[in-house]
Amino acid sequence: MANVVRDPKEHPDAILPDLTKPDPLVKFKKDDIALVYGSIWKQRYFTKVGNDYFPLGAQWDITHQIWRNYFVANNTDWWVPLYPADNMKRPTGPLCDGCHSVNYNLQTHAVTEWNVGCERCHGPGSDHVAKPTRATIVNPARLDTVAATDTCIQCHSQGQPLQKPINGVYYDWPVGYEPGKNLRDFWQLEEHKIGETTFTHFADGTGHKNRMQGNDFVQSAMYSHGITCFSCHDVHGTDNRAQLLKPANVMCLECHGPNSPNGPRGATIEAHTQHPAGSAGNECVNCHMPKIETQLADVNVRAHTFKFIPPSVTVQDKVPNACNTCHTDKTPAWASEALRKWPGRSPWRVE
Image (cartoon, rainbow, N blue to C red; front, side, top):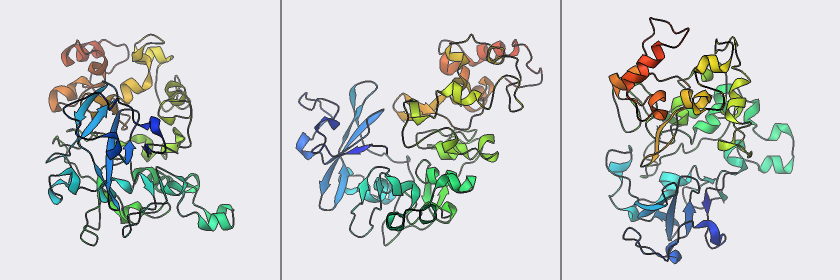
C-alpha cells in the first residue's frame, strides 16, 4: 500500500521540513496540519475544518529542500473556474480524496482508510472477508487487459468525470467506479489535438505534467499488445524504483533483448543504443521514457508512451527529446546530426 497520506499526530516523523525555521511562504503551524501528503518529490499539508480537509498555502520541494507556494492557478485544470480562488474553499474531498483513500463517502466525507488500500484496486471486500475465495473478490490480474489497466488509470490519469456536477459538487475523480466495472462509463481522459501544446499535453500528445501515466500508456504499442501496468510494477511494493518488479533495464530486456522480434534489432544493447554499458545512454528508460513531465518546478517524471522522441520533434513542436534530456549542453541540431551517423539508421528517418 502506498502510504502517501499520513496523520502527523500518529506519525510525528511524517513532516519532513523543519517548521521551526521561519519562511515567508509558511503561514501555518505544526498544529494546523491534520494530514501530510507525499514523501518523494513534494510534500503538501492539509488542515481540517468540520468534515473537510483543505490545502495549506506552502508545499515542500523535497528535491531542492525549499518551500514553494501551493495554489492551483487559472488555466491549469478543468475544475479551477468552478471553485473560488481560495485554498480554504477548495476541499480535498471532491478534488483529491477519491484517489488517495478507500471508499470516500460523498455525504459524510468519511473514508474507510487513507491511501491506496486493498479495496482501491480489488473492489469491495466484505464478501471476500465472509467467504475468502477467488469468486468473492476482483483480481485485476484475472481481468482483460483493458479492464486491468483501468484499475490504475482511474487515478493515474488526467481526465474528467462523465457526470458533473454531482449534487452540485464538481469531482476530479471517477465517482462510482469500482475495479471490474467499465471506467469509460465514469471517466474520460483529457482530450488533445495534435499540434497544440496545453497544460496537460505536449504537441505530439505526450503528457505534459504528472499524473499522465494513463494518458500516455493508452497511446503506446505496449498497451495495444496487451501489456498492463502490473506487467512491470507491483503495487504491493518492491525494493526497486517505482515499485518495478525488477531493475528497469532487466525488466525491459526480458522482452526486448538483442535481436528480439520486439526489437531492438542490434546484436547487442550497446549496438542499439550507441552508448557503452553502464552509461545513462544505455539505460532503456532514458531514451524511451525520458523525464519530461512536470512534477514540481524543474522536477520531472518519466513519460509512459515508450516512444523515442527525436530531436526533430523538439525543433518542430517544442517537445523535449530524449537526447537533450541528458546532453543538456548540446542543441537538438547536434543530436540530430549525431543520430544520422549511427550505423544502421535509415537515411529516410527524420531525426
